[in-house]
Image (cartoon, rainbow, N blue to C red; front, top):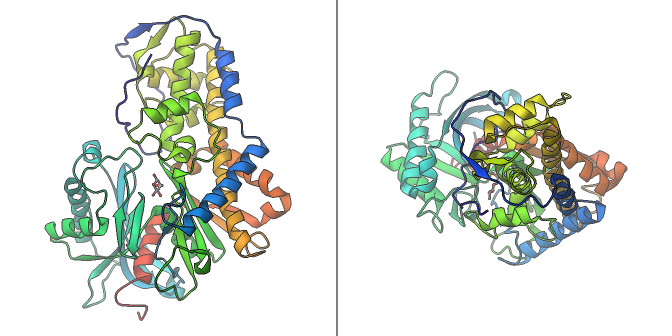
Length: 495
Ligand code: BGC
């Protein structure tokens, strides 16, 4: 059975759902030959997804090698290793009113923050979140940027209370744009490609800050973009504001990415003046990594039918947009080939992306004997009637996919740390080093988090891993972008 390729609906990773039974017209399909058992499909899946220590080690070593290759030359590796132009991180001295605009998934967020320097730190913040109508994800660049500029303009109009702009100044904003961008300066960058299900026409190859500036002009909004940052970079800056040991940031949400603090002399491809600090943040765009990943036929089929085949393979294996879809594909095979859910296959199970990662996460939370919640979710979401044994198989499938994702993400983190340690012996593994994590997948999926941590500990051993602190930094990227707007303010640091 071939599943029609349609652009996946991206939904934000939010795990609260009511698993209520809804009655719906259900179209059923005849089952094909029943030649294999669900147990044998599961066993093969577990074998293909296995991540024993040698596989993890291969992935972390390959990640470090790909990073080096990407730092040596442009297009030298799957990993773009994008220079962020963030050479100075927030110190705590930042003062004044700054905005941030965050575009990265199904929602965009606007935020303002009043910074009060070392003493007062963050005096006040306010934010609003607006969901992006799905049609805009497939529309034109102008439509998308007009929509976000108008949201920002409306938000700016409501400024008051504890927020005040110093006289004679133009409002400044950080722009978190969570797609691969080739930065050309701290406040400009060319979109390389869309990811995470976006397919907006007319933006690739363009400066996204220019697109935003033009849209702001159309909205008559007088605001200057002082910093263009990726969400991983924003997270690192936001976490570093509170903790000097933060050296790496990782996003595990709808999509995935990682960035870290690199020494300028370890970046052969860097031309032109080097940073005063001798360091800079590098955005790895590790979602494009692909070397030696344990992939299955389900991954390959999903990739082939995606809107970006052969791209973002690590992202498609470990991130929130895809885990539920991989599980759905396995369940469909079990339903069609092994009658896991009886003689028929509900139409809903045929729909790409019908099962979301929050659904598999919610099912894994069910510890009841009959797995009642699992039954409800299966019925509610993919129209499946299930017995307890079938539900157990479903949980095993979810666990296999979450385990592979979490462990591979952990191996990726170790790859980055290894690369950093290699350059600066002892400065990473020999002292407290913090990896700031953000994203709904990491935040809401406890099993995934546990698998990630286990892989890090297995790879580094108990002693070194005690120094590596993996810390959730919730919504750090918005405030991080506002802080970077402050650090890169045209009014300088002379507040
Ligand atoms: C994008 C990255 C982004 C990540 C997390 C990926 O699809 O390529 O730029 O940081 O998602 O949002």
